[in-house]
Image (cartoon, rainbow, N blue to C red; front, side):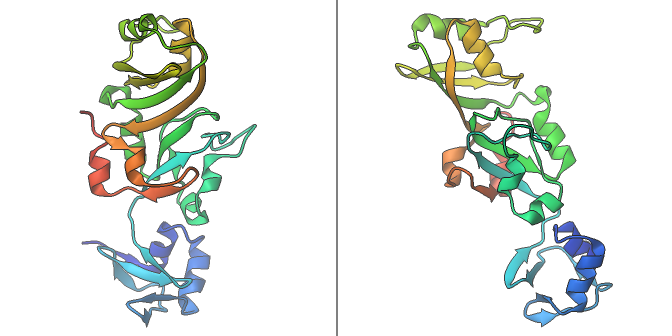
Length: 238
């Protein structure tokens, strides 16, 4: 059980500066169970808290864990240079909360991107020691051959890597379609591995992380959703 002053609660949920949050409370803009609470110093129990602001019910979340269906031509950088940043796809409250991408997808890669304001979660999910498999659907310029699959499973040598990198699994899904599962998450890894094996990646989509499949979230490209505790548990290594 944890109690916080009402202004701290609003600020923590991404509704602006402490001063602005205090003004919202004092102006009677925030209700709990239909009752106006206009004292910003009031200590409020955060466990199970739902308050109403701007005619919307808001569930208090100590941290947020988000899955975004990243479209093409969006950058994962917080300071994008050539394309819009993925943070522009989120509502303002989440950017106020300093939500950040967990790792990166190239600007032309689509698929599941995790985002959070929980630094420990971001660090843990980004750590190569976790060995969380990531599933990609790659479209290749040249036909997928048995030799290509064998090379990717055996390991290919990439520039600046001390040892060859191998796919955990690699399955042909069509003449120019390949499903590849990786654990490492190196820079441009799928594209560089395909190039090193004598092919070229013309399109790339991340369909799953761990046991969490993007299709199961039922969100459209460019949309996002909060992840439940059960969904977060699927992100653990197999």
